[in-house]
Image: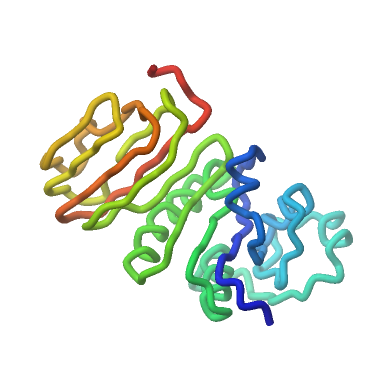
Length: 217
């Protein structure tokens, strides 16, 4: 089995393939979650397992990928297909997860679940990035992290708790040790000036970026 520890998890949301998506998935192993298999061919990925209840898999997709090993689950289960695919990746040695198609789609509840789960996965020590091509997100936990964004592109810090000591540099609207109340909109619609550095003393958040959206510049 490959020792590569980066896994692309193919989820059922929207995907616009660009250079950033290609770079994120370069050399990655792949696991598909139900209808997320539709992204495999466009990305040039061959999933090593296909997980789910297959309730959103059309017959033609099933025929195209008939040779891919399947791990079927009943529709009535305690986990989403995406979560099952992620756990399979972790069991296979994943340390970095690229959640493809993790925004949009027909199910807002599933998309929100992916965003929340990314934060809990980061707390488990995994490097996680979510992408649809049009949008990207990375968890922000206590500590510091960098995100390389095109100058002038939009980003937001979306808090899932109250945030203490949030600092942003490389942004049009920088922050220095700011405390942000849960639900406050102060950290929505900022503009990157290139490499963004964010640090946090306590709390949980996501940095959600729109790399091709320069409407706020």
